[in-house]
Image (cartoon, rainbow, N blue to C red; front, side, top):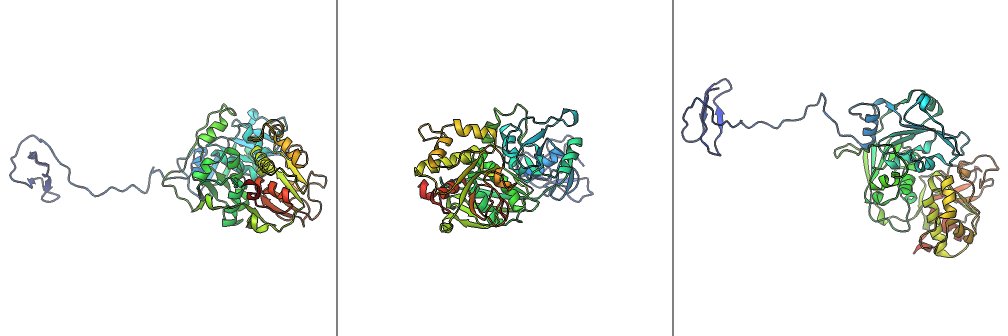
Length: 451
């Protein structure tokens, strides 16, 4: 191109006569030719669009990011199969008693079994610091998804898969698409996470999240403590979900601070990530719920079931046997000052929870522990930690339904025969609702005692 001097005028620009021409013209006033270029303004170009091939990063969801990193790939998309490196493997006691073995990041000769009985694996894993953001945790029980509360990918597998993982440290997984659940609004003081997940399952049905990731976010979720987030993720399997996950935040980091010395790296969904569907809830407008027999999706307002006479109450399991669950029940008993009208069984999830029932004072109780409040209310003495009647089991299982009785329970499933007798009727509920029902002998909205 011939050299041209551009008059220092902000409105000037250079145009070519035609693409093949080597001469140029000034568009304003007069131009003088110089041998040296003083300045050149680049002609305006059309907007450059990103390439559709090559090393272009695609926005990913939290679950997709974890699996991509664990499979050492730059990106993964839903439906893609990938060999995933497993960080932690939990092997559940086949008797359903909740004991577990843990195989850490180093497999083979470095794998170690947990020698002591801790209690229900899903709660003990968190208490022992084995749930860390950004990692992959697999276990031989469907409620392994509980650990997703820590911002990690956690799901249940079969024992054959567990054997393969224990030898190789890997598993072949299909990447699930993600459903996003945005829960906003101030949490009413009569609601718990159990009400939230029953609302969601009732909304999308038992098959609504089949082989999908369920990601929970929003101001309400951010306000939940870790054990409440565990309840939320625990029951995604009841909607068919592959895993549930809550983005890690300060609450997560504070919980883990004194539980693990291992480093971890949380990941988060990209702003432009693609979600299969998004559901939004204004939590401030929700009411206490139950799931009527015989399905977790059979949602109903607790106050609509006030005429349902019950025979017993069961507070326990990986869903409702954590310390926060017992504290919630204790608050209702404390507020009422009354005694229960039906047998009320208490089964702590772990040894730690069992000890805390006898040692930790309940806020606002004047120094009373949960065990003291439960005794005053006429509840059964807290049993040894374990799954208890949640999984039915032999006829001598503590609190098992051996007759066709009606039970309000903080567990996760109410299918026929789940807690024993196939004609038993189970109403799934939060610890608040369970405790309130124990005081009246009927399915009861906890607002009767909390407001």
